[in-house]
Image (cartoon, rainbow, N blue to C red):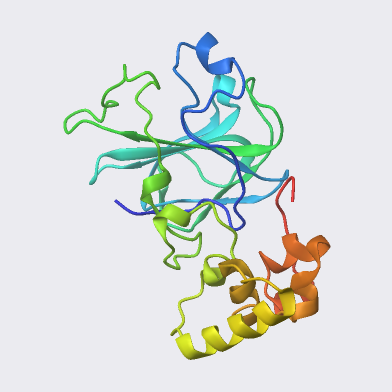
Length: 240
């Protein structure tokens, strides 16, 4: 199973299974039953896979939400705390389709963000498998994130890294000789070995060394290419 990330710009507030707050114990769970992504109010939320909308509207403690079910592969994804939805029950959507906008609706929430949940379903009535696993049947979605919101392939183990780390989600033929040359130049300039983000920012992002050296510019060059920035594109991630 392969999932797309539900947001364009990724910053994880709280991974699966964590206990940063005591909500989960009070609700009868062992810990957080999803992944929380930072998202300012109004941030576009996209479908992580093809499927049918089984819920779109207000859902108690989760606020305004969407549930998307893949009946063929027997799983569903949940998108909580939305501002509003852009789909309705019964709609058939494709991976990457806009399904709503992020917010802070619901009871158990600590600020504007997207709570993303994943549950596997049985083969007969599409009931949740392993409901009593301590997370009401939810499982960690992190290993299944293999694509950016727009379908570009990314490394699943690096799903929560910046766009820069992911080569700006661009599929491009690597030029190892050029990467090595750039890395050596940056090492002489920085007086240390550059990391993957810095190398990618120079090669794939088009950023100059002076900008990459500036810690105040990190949130920009790590998530936007230089031409995107000068065309006026903004970063829409809370806390960055």
